[in-house]
Length: 294
Image (tube, rainbow, N blue to C red; front, side, top):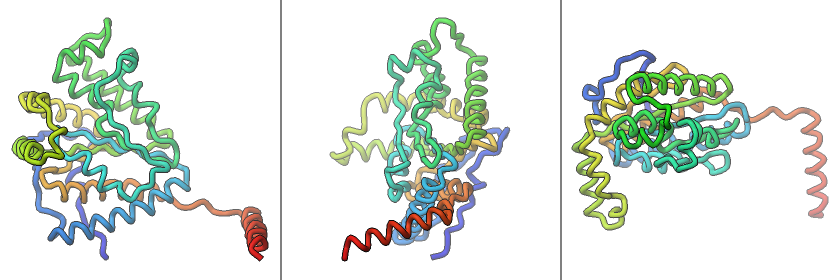
């Protein structure tokens, strides 16, 4: 099957580009023609990702960090579950970042991410991330007071310093072999409302909706502004942001899978070459194993 052409430049935010989420669509023309077509394209992407991940693990040359951020009900869990379904658990980890623990609050805001970063040959997926410290804590003053400590000073300078810390941190990772892809699933407020209603109508999804989720909708504009400032300040050539329209879940999954495919293909992972000495060892082992069966 021919590879599906998905124009990723449409979704990638160039370094220094102003970001206005109100002008960026949450729904675009689908890259698939039917449900069957969607399933076929996704299956092809998953198969290719599986092969690339095996090569990536064997090559042991780079780490790959994939960060997902979004408003509630934008589909992060579903994207991760469907897109990465063919990736083996060896060398791949998914980490959810919720409210910082008391121990994490005793450290700088990047500290809790360090131990979850991918090693060479590994993939780490962050379901939310250290970016929460320039998003939710920017919207909610109480969360900020818990986080900044006695010497912290809220205000524009704090956010500029945090953006700079993030850029420096991600540049440090890139220089040391970790490639970073950051994806914002861009869902509309109306689509979120519909998905919240669906969680009420479907009993097996009731657990996913809480009064706090509804309360957060009151801060929609504040979150939008926080995301705009964050993406604009931290999308770089080395660690770009992609703003992916997410009102159509299937379409979002195909776009995201293509982003991950491009990231892995860009690493050009290959299985290690085997030396003549190693080949000789393998042939000796083969002869030994065959002899055991006689």
